[in-house]
Image (cartoon, rainbow, N blue to C red):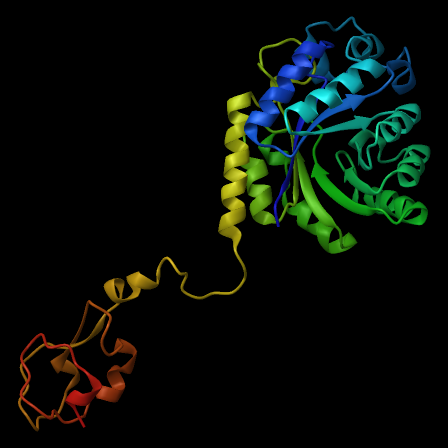
Length: 336
């Protein structure tokens, strides 16, 4: 099954529609399935008293600014959305966005979206979950900061109010996430406990962890990207640059090909190597007609197109039917 790869542009456009288009260009060039933005009205997302996270203060270089003030500069307008959707179509890439308030959920539905992503911060937001269940045909639930119990409660709300397909992304919301806190095996426990399609939303530096997640069974990968990690803004520092995004996509596609099936048998490409790499039973010494074959008379040498060494016990004690030289590769007709 092909991994769904979501390139999270998020708010890395810094409020510029032209930068947003350049991010779409980079995502299309990388070969991802979706480029995802964030849809919100800042005053419906946070109060004027909400402070920024430590990483947001560090990455914006403005600790006196409130979270509301920061987010107001990062809003995409209604017209921006239409323009970006059209631009995505021109670049042959699918537009996607995460809504952070109820009105924005409705707006995304009006834009024609049927796939809805629930961000980690909304996992415990009951009215938000109910609204997503009402609108979505397909739901992706991100689980940063959550316990198994909280994930179960969110899934229960969604299932009570919708028959939409639900996929669950393991996630850690620290930007960047320390490797010691990734805990990829939790993704497998989510799959086992809730019997859902699993994926991984990554905030580590680099591309190793999402690649490992695919090897473990993730069917969806979400990764932040930017045009330049040195740009000011809350998420740039923990994002991939375009070349890295493309490398991640290529690596994931290679992993998909390599996973194969659980069936173990020689592959089409390696069958030709069996005779070259394996060994056959050879005579270590010359033997005359009528002599008995002893274990000390035998040696195992390449090529492997004769009697298998696994048949050695069947050969020992048999009688040679003709004179044979040292180094001779035995056949079943050489003894009785």
